[in-house]
Length: 46
Image (cartoon, rainbow, N blue to C red; front, side, top):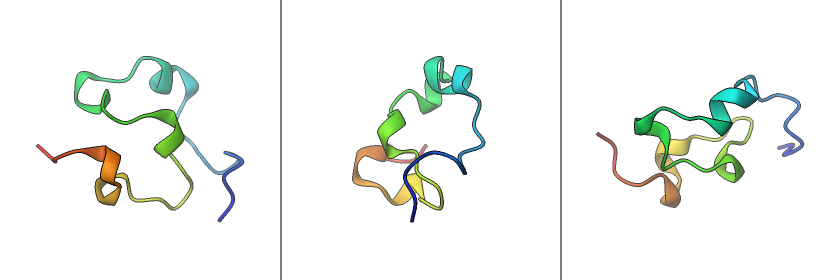
């Protein structure tokens, strides 16, 4: 898995100003092919 970010398609402005529901997700957890809902730092799902 590459963590260079080349495959991440989320706009940078969305990462800088995330919706309230995604505020708990940090940029470092956004990786190509990663499943944030399974990441320990993702917290409980709504």
